[in-house]
Length: 367
Ligand code: G6P
Image (cartoon, rainbow, N blue to C red; front, side):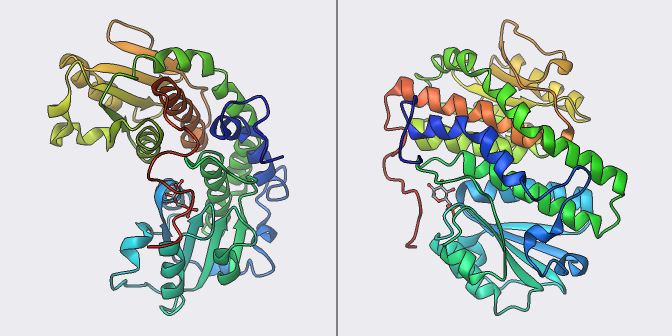
């Protein structure tokens, strides 16, 4: 029952812990052992063949999911993808290339700016409109030509958690489906589908760090600022981690692509500034490690979220949290979990209203 917190103190924590099962629900019927089942987009999945461009429009946490999808779509399908917040998109003149898919992301399907963007897009000659949404009866679903539901179940905590990771899952399905029409090999498709199948188990592995993260959260409670760093798909996850911390613990947090450190944020680094670095073991590891050295050299306190293969561990100025080593495509989804737990525990230490943060609404239905 969605309105029952069960063993949890807050809906947010309940929803964090539901992620493994709702991600399974999101994958259910959408992938076989070897393939993405394009029937999940409805009878008209023909559109996948025609897509030459993708425009993604969303707000808040959903926008961060869209930012991850840009990396996936361009990487796997090799077709251009742009991502924009709906409140900007709707008030400018948008140039729409031929055969562009208009893709909205929304937990509620009722966000005023996202709906206005969809209504505008319908006048602009897009190939078609696809909504990735959590609420089947929502306005966004009703007004879009195609829908892929995230199947996360009702999300009650204002700070979005399971809606985000299921959006990412649905976006991964969509990215692979588009990629298959753009030359992705059957072998690679099977590899990606198998990675998706292992996702629920990895989410549980990530959740196993909860007690450890609770301990490190104590050290954050008296901080006024925090800086999140990541590269590649970890950059939008850094943005999402910083948004979660702001939303529920009221600590000012910023996120930067780690390669931008020298262009400004390094000036903020001192012993009072915790730096949260997302460090999966991939081809950007050495670059990221050198970014971390720059931070350490300036006395910054580093909180590193990394898998064991990175060879990073606790040191004088490094607090290490282990994240499961996963297929590269899954990194943004799995790395989200510890950041949700961190913001949750910091908020609990600070005594804020975790499920109903001040000044915020679950769904922004008026501009
Ligand atoms: C509000 C919520 C966020 C959400 C955003 C977009 O700001 O507090 O959690 O990400 O709206 O909402 P949507 O329902 O369109 O995903």
